[in-house]
Image (cartoon, rainbow over all chains, first blue to last red; front, side, top):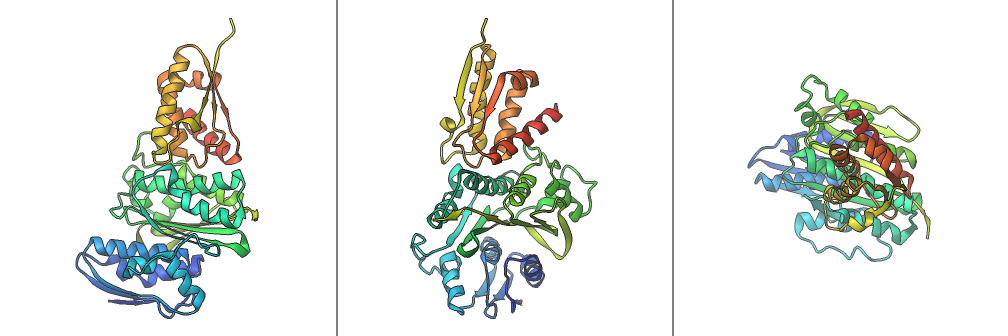
Length: 281
Length: 100
């Protein structure tokens, strides 16, 4: 099957939902299936799209699917971003540019299965080259990433582990981070302990508010996602959480998440969040 | 008789390649040891960046299981250097209290 993305995936709720719907056949693909993802007509793909596409590629390799991904080579800023993002390296083995060149604002794709303290180091290092990171900024950034990473380790049962993509937007003093897995998805994980909560949207709403736990580990209290939401609110950022058949959005200045059903479920969990950071160096 | 106070620094337990919950376990073991010896424990989180809720969940859970909630409330004092730490800790602390 061929999935064509002829629009920009511009890190918004609407464009993410549109991509998830367009790529539904890829998400449903089974062992040995064949698919093509054609993004050549998109004129913007950001870190959120990179993480989702990378998760499809890694899952496909695991399931021995035959696939082709076409990426745009225009405009030049997009082509450059896709090289620095590591997506071309993942797809074609193309050599990865040096991420430490001064003008680079993109963190290369990272996959992980552990939860080491230093997993956030590449993101922090890159941002710190561009802006002065306060201790609060750094703590908030590391904690936010870690809450998602720990959820993957504790609950996801994702054979690809997790995928991380990030980009710093210098003009906005904003970092956008996407972390995706292809595991159970939050609703299914929660229903292992709470089978009575049938609606994926209700699961996501309660998880964002906090206190709903799958108890996958004995000490789990269901606070990770709500801590992430609180951090996002505290710095004027935004969180989009996709899991199973639901999408939740948290904006600064709002206490209650907006949760909507997805037309096609996502087989896993993906957290997309923006944090405002620092003063210019 | 004045109660002795032992100061522990969480950053001393942190290794970059370690799992934060393992760090929390190691820290909790020393907190528990000092509490059992009758001392008050000051735990400083100054300089520790990115401690997630699972870190504090393990720390507080272990101490409560070993020494009780009252010991955690009265004889363990926490020092933070960011609001993010304080907020994350407070939420885990409150959840641990409510759990028993």
